[in-house]
Length: 463
Image 1 (cartoon, rainbow, N blue to C red):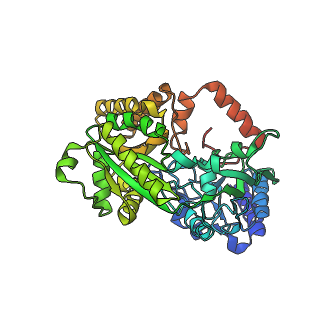
Image 2 (image 1 turned 30 degrees about the vertical axis):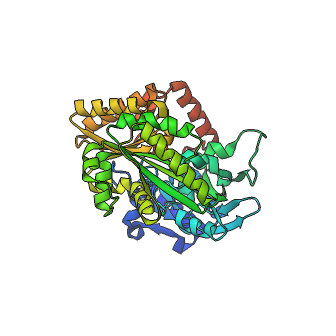
Image 3 (image 1 turned 135 degrees about the vertical axis):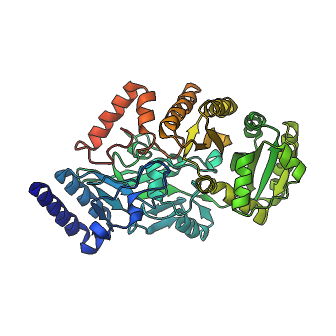
């Protein structure tokens, strides 16, 4: 016991020497927020140490010291993740990027921003708006950090047009567990020189390296937008309509489905009045939400008119065109669907992704599995890219585990994956290891070992 205490005191001193006494929290100094992210599954875990570095060099030194002391390390941005990936180890070091939150540069000529990992999406959006530009990854929570986006390869509703994080991060500075700093990519959109380490680090959930600086792609902020809401009599009809809308050439910025129960819940929780007649609400089982944008008002109106006709031909009960406050309110309410599900008592929220042409098949199977388990699944999702978000209501842990396993297996059988944007974290790793190709998992372990030979980065996540 004395040896353990001595080692702990030695590590405490080393970490404090790196970040300063005010930059290291231990014991009762560690508040409850550091013990969890927003995953609905799993108990909070208070780490032994919380370090709040201010520079990339400090992050690298912390990792080198943790490697030497064999202390597990977990990175934390804003703690908005949904898979337990930012939940620390009880004997571990949590590196919080709350003090590395500077926007270092907005380069309008190259249309990139260079930011520290703790920068929130809200702050980046405000800063880029002043330049008439925008970072287009909006995973539904503007308090999320750019570093968190990198860790999970976050997506969001606008991915149908602009892609997910890996399509919008051009370069990184990253700290390795060896204490080294590397730079990958840069302010360039083409790269055919060796392995693409930027893309390898993105989505690795803090298991290979920790991003200390991120160069993100920016796009022009278009002046005009509109949102269409189309009710359908059943969810398969919505799913069948999606490929036709994608092929239409309108290039929607948002293409979402919302089932009847979810729309009712978010409308109630957000005091949202969309002006849908009672007769339509009683008939509709699911809704398609389409967002379009353009630099020219007349072209936007043409796109809206064409989509209205197309949706009618695809079986929509009606089409409602929302602009201004109504459109903003609907999108904001949809983005907060997780909080609505949490308030309703959901036991888990998952984000399976499948090819969009088979979304209706997947959803039918998921409903069948839930019914057989005496559980409930309701949801919404990014219909344009096949990302199905389901709130799962099943109180029994064992029954819920079997249900999720069946749902994940069905998704993979249809050519999909367990997670489209939330990541595996600590919540879904077991399912991943049981269902994924063991050859791929073995290769991932070798890659992990090359980056992190001591195995200190986020143990229990992914592998």
